Amino acid sequence: MNLKDKIAEYPNFPKKGILFRDFSPILKDPSAMTVIADEFTKHFHPKNIDLFAGIESRGFILACILAARYNKGMVMIRKAGKLPGKTTKTSYTIEYGKDTIEIQKDIIKEGQRILICDDLLATGGTAKASAKLIEKVGGKIVGFAFIIELTELNGMKGISKYDCKSLVKY
Ligand code: PRP
Ligand code: HPA
Image 1 (spheres, rainbow, N blue to C red):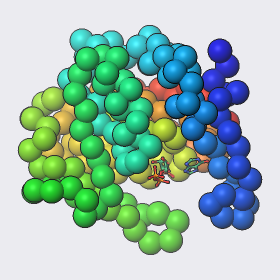
Image 2: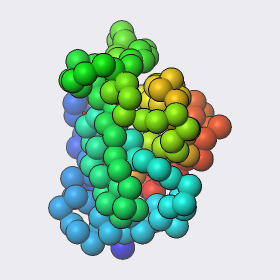
Image 3: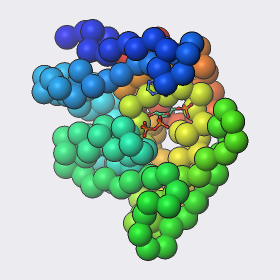
């Protein structure tokens, strides 16, 4: 199966001039989801991973697909203000202004090995901030899993010290 055939393109979404890559057709096709899990299984060995972390919101989906395949748990990295209990936050700059992500304070135990998941890597701002957040709460980053990578935005640059794997590159 060619996964690229399962990614839809929407010109001028969410803004004029942006070509939006949408992974919805992958989710609709169980065999495509199996291919995704197979591909990451070839790259990341289960013995090196304790937990999967999903970045809100589409990253949750990949993290859950992989957590189920690897028989491991999953934790959520959310946009600020949505998680109950004590949280730890990290802010990062976006195109206009700043965004904040957070994680529940005690959900990761010191030294647990975390694979961070998202549907897509663009500028890498969100991924880099997620790495900072996971390390702040004592997690050890195993690497990053992305379905889609927009290579011309150079997002890998900010996370190059980690083991990063993307499946479909544009
Ligand atoms: C998208 C995507 C990544 C992030 C990538 O999420 O799912 O999380 O942007 O961009 P970056 O590499 O430039 O940081 P979005 O903020 O649109 O949230 P959503 O998944 O809730 O739609
Ligand atoms: N698709 C989905 N999410 C995104 C994109 C895209 O093309 N660009 C930045 N975030």
